[in-house]
Amino acid sequence: MEENYIVEKTVNFVKEKLHGAEGGHDWFHIERVYRNALLIAKSEECDLLVVKLAALLHDIADSKFHNGDETVGPKMARDFLIGSNVNEETILHVVNIIENISFKGGNSAKTFHSIELDIVQDADRLDAIGAIGIARAFNYGGFKNRQLYNPEKKPKFGMDKEEYKKSDSPTINHFYEKLLTLKDRMNTKTGKELALARHHYLENFLTQFYDEWEGRK
Image 1 (cartoon, one colour):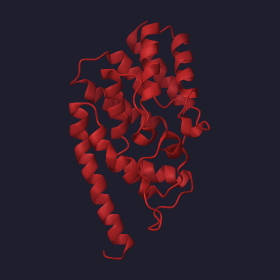
Image 2 (cartoon, rainbow, N blue to C red):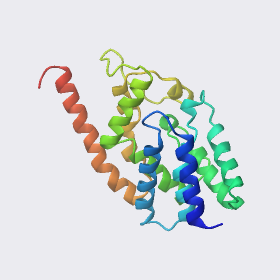
Image 3 (cartoon, one colour):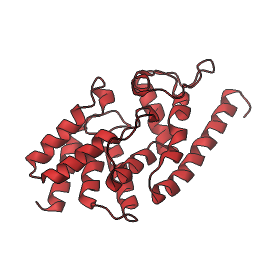
Image 4 (cartoon, one colour):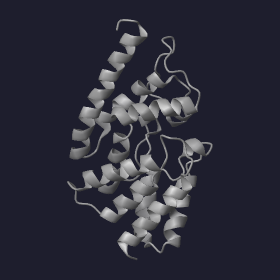
């Protein structure tokens, strides 16, 4: 198996599968996570092929768009990698990353650990904060026809996985329930450094948002 060939084949597979996907979980999201992962990997000792494949395949079938079924994505990734003659050790590692990367309310313990998972998870979380993270949050909120903000609906903290998956709270609540918590959930030194500036951007956005909402500015 030639590494460049399998990576290029995976890119083409993901582009095809995510054609027409919701804007926050489309090919461009995958591409950004891939770039983030390569950047973080430069400072870590890791299996770069595993990082590349996991970053490319991590959202191949996000459970949010498959009736909450968390088995679809890992199975689709495994079937693709088997069909591409990737060795079983690499396949198992990539699938384990896909199964453990998701936020899931932030209260689910990882059942698998590796530096490659840490890298790809940080790369994915970076795309959930900062300017891109704000754009993705409101895009998904619109996709689900959620309110922008409702002062009477307070954020819910400490949700378990099922509560988090079923939540239909306003998009602003999502900042407190997930986005603002990610800075302190980063795994790698580079991930933590990159997350800090993006976290501050979220805070500044919220200040401006409330000032405009209340007619102060």
